[in-house]
Length: 243
Image (cartoon, rainbow, N blue to C red; front, side, top):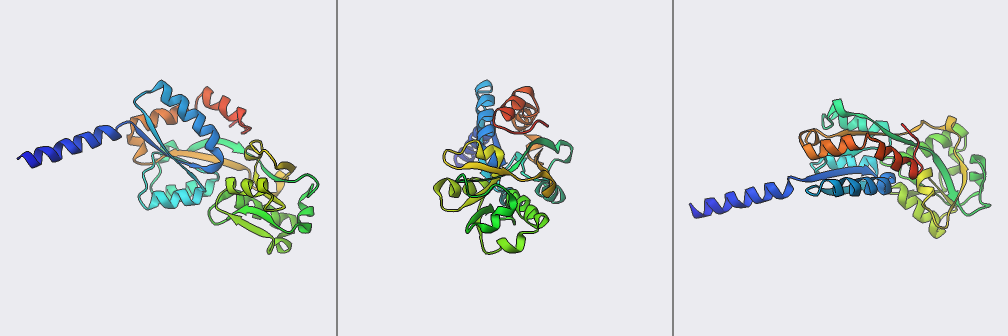
């Protein structure tokens, strides 16, 4: 009887300790703005604790498929959100657009000023296209610009867009494809050119509650907060396009 009571007390304590948790799985390029918004929300809701997981959208989806806890998912492209939806892991009614971004090429000034200049470079960093949307957008742009065959041996694959920026910042590559919002955070690398929009699909960030997240009242409240004016102001501050 005493053992049973101890087990029950442990379960009750564990349940109450997790009651205010909100698990976020968010594209790496949104790290700064989501950190600011989650901190602001937590100050207004003292009982809430955020558990944040930033990374490549494809990697995050695979983690959720394998049982990783997630209440809110924000992807850097529509395809990975569709994948989560098709797996019946997203709350369909909640799916919508969070914001938009722009693809740019960063590096040391003088290295390149257009897509055609890329063929003269030796090392170009992109996110791995299999899991990083920024890498998918970049390869799409290569193909439409007619330079994809010339770049095959020049590409350095990174695990996410933040690593691409790091390689450019350190001078380990001649340049890197990142989002405009990431480039604005750079200390060394500069925007050398903006990739013409007609060369790639618009960078769209869809967001949704997961199926468990839809049942988490704190997660649902934060999700509503991400639709509000404070979130819009933060997105603008960090260089994202208004939805």
